[in-house]
Length: 133
Image 1 (spheres, rainbow, N blue to C red):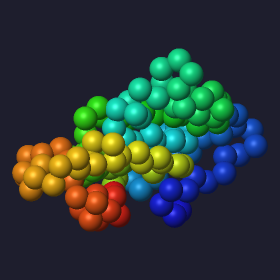
Image 2 (cartoon, helix red, strand yellow):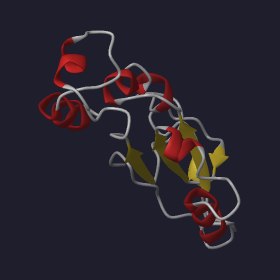
Image 3 (cartoon, rainbow, N blue to C red):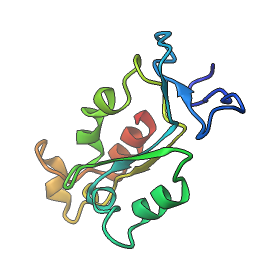
């Protein structure tokens, strides 16, 4: 099985399911997952009329839409969550993932970028971090 894929479920099983623990050989079954990973824009996507709620409605009975939105987080801080949100062992990898960061990274003043504790990041650093994610 390739990372991010889900084997086809037998025709007798509805809704479609994927093996749980695809990498560890578990025999339990779970639905495919779509993970929404990002900042407060993602966090608020399940409010009435939000894009996350629309995805969940569209994929109802086909996949579970999981929201992992962290208000105020930037790309650098998101790196620390990667192993918790996308573990390398255990459950099957997500069928699809959205990554929405950047609103909290954008530097308004150059002096803020030099502060190591600053939320703001340079465009070069944002690009490198998104490639890692």
